[in-house]
Image 1 (cartoon, rainbow, N blue to C red):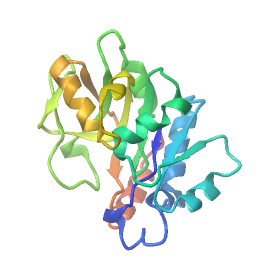
Image 2 (image 1 turned 120 degrees about the vertical axis):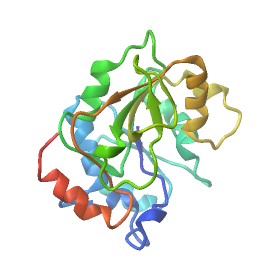
Image 3 (image 1 turned 120 degrees about the horizontal axis):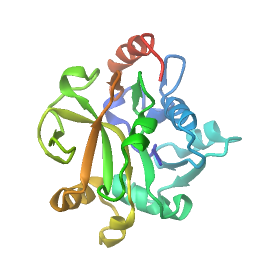
Image 4 (image 1 turned 90 degrees about the vertical axis):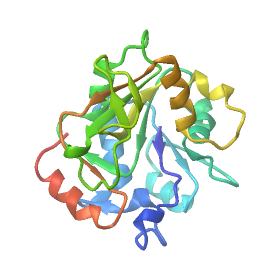
Length: 222
């Protein structure tokens, strides 16, 4: 699942007439970087949700096997968007990726798959230490216990990629909701886990992050 529906307000003015996933970094749109990571990890089915300037994204993806799903009339946020895509994704655990980050080093989805244990986990986040993050402002998202379980706060950033079971989505009554609702329930049950990314990462959410991301990508390949 590729999240490509957002308004990209942090990326203004570049997103005034272009959706953020089509903002170019190192010569290609951000969404193409995300697609490349998925392809290299052997992902066979890719779904992207659309809302802001969807015609441009549909045109960009035309001729590929990537399925797109418009959210209308309102944007559904991350939780609602993922649930809305389940008819296309199926009921198995899925990879979920934001389309505004780049990685170097090991492929992020390969790392997640290698550490995924469905007998213990409902979701597994790929994390980056705040000290190793590029293009990111603000505090960390998670504290990770010795066994990998996550709780709020701490010095780890959610990198924008995770693998998750989808059964909890059905019990949320709201149509529009954040995945944070699901993650809080997992924290309470001790089933939200994290693993560190052993490479570089850049949050490409703002115009000033683009040259930082491009410099990072020159240092190594996923």
